[in-house]
Length: 299
Image (cartoon, rainbow, N blue to C red; front, top):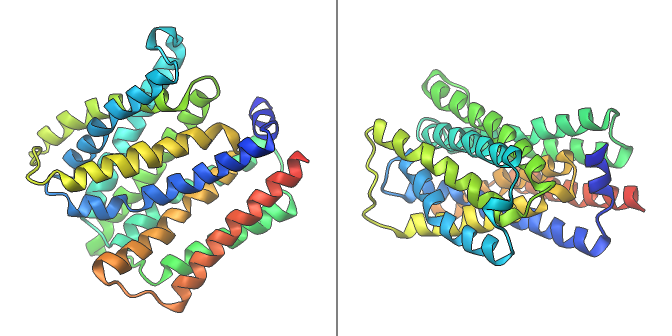
């Protein structure tokens, strides 16, 4: 019930800004797989640098916002560290999966968090969504199915990468649920800095144990990845978390496969068909629809 009150009591101007942040965050994160592919470090090491390069920036922003780690209750700090662990596992298995399956499979399966969060939101509300939200859910998942349907391909060759990507989506769901709780009583940038820092501490030894190349020859993809996916992408997403229900957040995650398909077209000349464009338009229309539905619920 407390969650519901938070979502419904957000003032309209602030809710509009938070929705813009939610969309912008997913836009920034969507191009992460492309940068992972362009990095010359190992998959897990790439994840480490994404976080390690972002943490100082996030920490400075959080400090200027007034956050002091000594003021954070021990229980909340423990929850942030747990979120960092979930995020580290998500990055490890998904980055490995990217190189073991088709990019379409990895993107679709890793975004199973969208479905899991939507289900969690319905369970949390203890009732079925109203008609407009229900229509938005159906439209979003139908659009995602159209968008990814042509590139998704089950085969023994892709099996390992497919289940790794699916596992990544599960742990990303755990991470988001933990951060939703953290954001109920903590500032966004500092919370993300702590979660990112704790995740980086898991990733560095994991990369070393896997025998990966850790030190990069070209820093450019890693710096861009840290600033776009972590500072801006996760930063905007973390800010938006307490302002919307898990259902809305889950639907917003579907922007990522839509934009990843666009990135594949731009970078790798992967052709987009009319069905791809239609699917992307359906996902974006669903976001507008669910935003209108939330606005009516608050009225």
